[in-house]
Length: 149
Image (cartoon, rainbow, N blue to C red; front, side, top):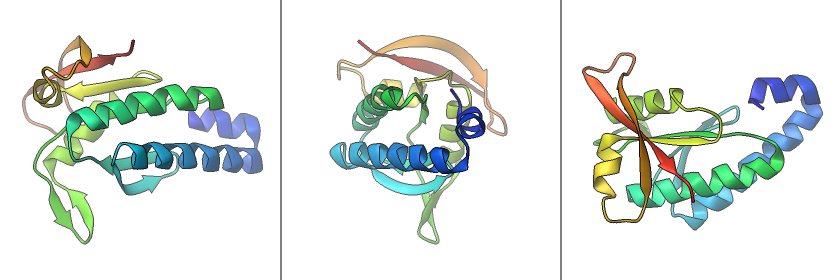
């Protein structure tokens, strides 16, 4: 169930309670995998990690854990140079990550080819999702879904 549908079905108070549990769960996993929360918007999180394999492991752990709450998450992962703008991260790499996330199906973790290439040998398996034009981003980008065992 997506967040708008859940909020409409549950009502504001129950949705807020569910959202608080969702956020606490994600924050526990961010801490476990050494992720840094950068920003939130509604039920969305923007986080950074010290390595792409750790980001993938966090994303898959969260996707599995939030299913117990009856929710689906979508994770789009990209790595690249970022700018520090007023204490927040910015730059084209951030935009690419958001565009990758926009391609996700419920409970899916998608990564750019950059991430896939950097985690070679880590034991993470991927399914090729083909080349995509990402809104506002030059060129086509090869996208991969993380295969969960």
